[in-house]
Length: 300
Figure 1: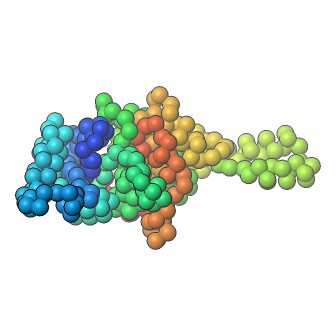
Figure 2: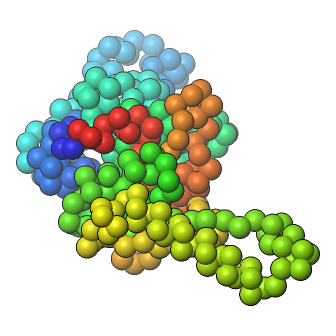
Figure 3: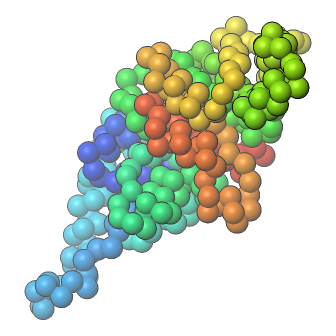
């Protein structure tokens, strides 16, 4: 389960050094090859205001050279030279294609921000990369001072959750891990129980029983011989999954949240899961999203 190639996408904006530093830290930790890309969106080559005699070929060449130098500058502390790409086009398409062609094990990207109506409707570059990426995507929000030390993993009882938990061990083997499982008892169901003359004590007992059952299932699924590794612990919470994971991201000790996403169909590619999207938008720490495509790779 080694990480051999890391693709880092850099917008050459304010947060680029932070994103580059995390990619460099992970590349050093895993002795991985860094591949860096900057995508030039909508270069003003057809701007009517440009001087009529300007050499567009030379202009494009200068833009590419300038951006390539910026990429190299951001990555100058890497142990070995990064492979760099500067391309024009749609960022999410180019990032996805490069991840595939370089057989990237991990994509590192900044959170970005929605620019204009189209991105507010269809999602920012980070959203779209997460939806379509062939490998896990790390969205960097915090400074990369050291390897991740405390990871919160959102888990249920699916293969996607298993892949997310395995990636916690893969990305930062020495980190402590908190497996967070959220269950929900709909308010309408509780009200129906009350109307059926169920006492509050019995409802509380039912809630406790569900929590204990979930804890046993989590330990069975993510542990060995009925026990979790020493560095792991379980939290069972009743409530909303996205709110719970966002709160976990805001605790001082937590420096990474990991969650898996489901589905490989057309709908899944156009609509990022509501939990994942809310966490990506509101988390205070870095977020690793593990897509369905990564499940087949968890035994490597």
